[in-house]
Image 1: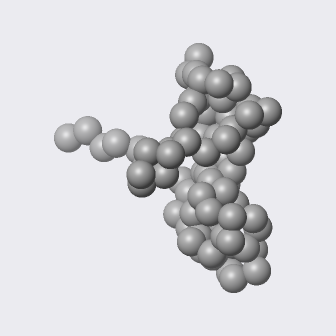
Image 2: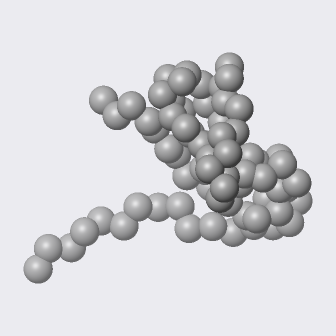
Length: 76
């Protein structure tokens, strides 16, 4: 089983589920975000959250439309 599960929510955020302490989230300068007590969290995908990189639900207010489905590899 994967140690990290990332689910693309329909027209919403990336939902990250992980054992506490087993993933590190850092900003562009290498500073860590505090994930203490967060075995799951949602990352903004629409760009509108005021709590970036975390989702604050803005996607539903701005009508964000995303592509969610995995594309099957075609052999050939």
